[in-house]
Structure formats: C-alpha cells, structure tokens
Amino acid sequence: MLQVTATQLRDRYKVYLEAVSTKQWDTLQGFLANMITYNGKALNKDGYIALIPTGIQYVAVDLVVDTDVLKVAVRLENVVRGVKQTEHCFYQFTDDLVVEKVWSLVVDGEATGPHKG
Image 1 (spheres, one colour):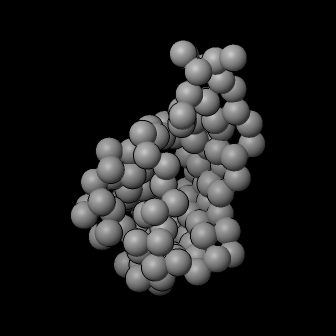
Image 2 (tube, helix red, strand yellow):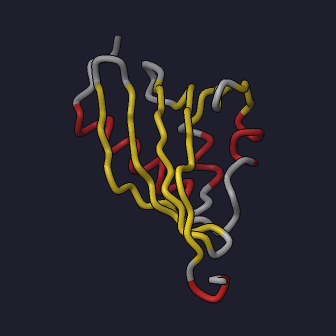
C-alpha cells in the first residue's frame, strides 16, 4: 500500500472538493477511478459527475483522514436550490489516490435566502 501522510490525503481531498465546487470537470476526472461506487451503485466517471447538483458550493466543516486505509470522512455544508444542507460523506481512495467509493447521506436542510418559505 502507498505510504501517504495525513496532510497529503487531506490536501488531495481538498483539491478534489474544490474541483467539485467550482465545476472543474476536467480536473475532477483525474481524481476519479474509472468506476466509482456511490452508495452501493456502480457508476462511470460521467455518471458520478452527473449526480453533482448544479450551483452547489461545498464547505468541509469537519474532515478526518485515515491513512492506513486511505479513507476520508467529512461533514459538508452546502446550499443547493435555496436550501442549506448538511451532508456526511465517506470516501475510499485507491493506492493511486483516486476516489473509488463514496457513501453520502444528507441529514438535514433549511430554506435560506429568497427561497425561504
């Protein structure tokens, strides 16, 4: 298994998250395995990218890395279509430091801004 430091894995994830948030799809392609398992469903890169809502900005609030198994756990806050959400995600990286598995759960949402009811 590749020897990677916690800082390297954390930094790798942060660049991945920035690519997602800024819709840098070409950059994001380099962070993804050819097949990604998302919540138990196998997807190719394009299928995974298609799941990302338009207009979303992710902010990593809590971020934990485990270099022994190349996993990242993160609590994200984001706003999508006027609703603030908290999402918990777990990422499994390969030895090449590309994402191969993602488990995601949106746990709550609250209307914000002009969409607030």
